[in-house]
Length: 61
Image (tube, rainbow, N blue to C red):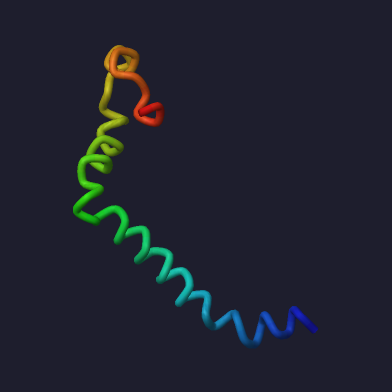
């Protein structure tokens, strides 16, 4: 019985749930106060290993 409830009632709302999660992530990323942190995270793949050892890992700050 619970699976029938899930199939009939909750399944049509998955698109709404996923869209809400997506919009929440976009809001956090583009929030003006998070700009510096997001730019720092975006530059991680471009850093050299020597720079990371000197500055320390960003998750330790």
